[in-house]
Image 1 (tube, rainbow, N blue to C red):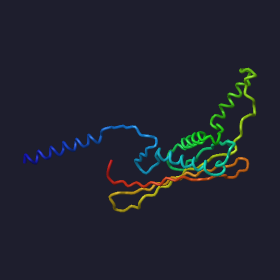
Image 2: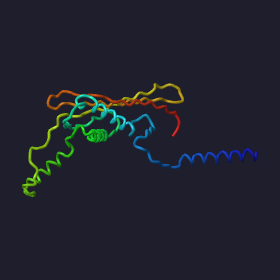
Image 3: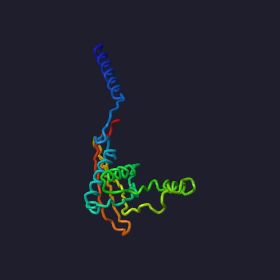
Image 4: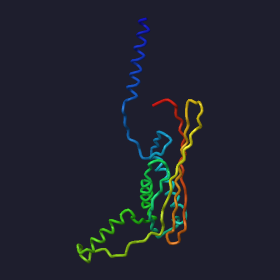
Length: 204
């Protein structure tokens, strides 16, 4: 009887130690190139893969492949058609930075247009010496417009008796480069992320 009681105590002590270890908070540095995936959803590493694919495609295909005049682009954003809160502006910011770094294109700063207009008005309101004021109507117009759409689809296994349930997530980013003067789509491509997760019915 004493041995049985002792075994129960050892079991509960071991269980408490296991729970305590599981509740310990740990942190570590994660590299921007490191793939860290916790579930089937969208992750920061997906953004990098998608951005790299789109930039490579843009620079290696017509009309930017053989251009020598550094055409001017404007980004009108990526429409988020998923059910998740995904920052598509982070994608376009990274694309713009990578494309600018390539030295092959230039960008109109659409986000700062109101501030540019405000500064223009300030300079012509008599606050700035005439010889140092910017010249009006000298901004460069964009030749191409870069746009895109992000979509997702989720598929779950039908309800059946099983120890694990599987979920399949599909993300697709479609992008287009449109010639503003002609309205023609000069480039289009897509990048996909497909991920399957298998989860036990019980757990935490």
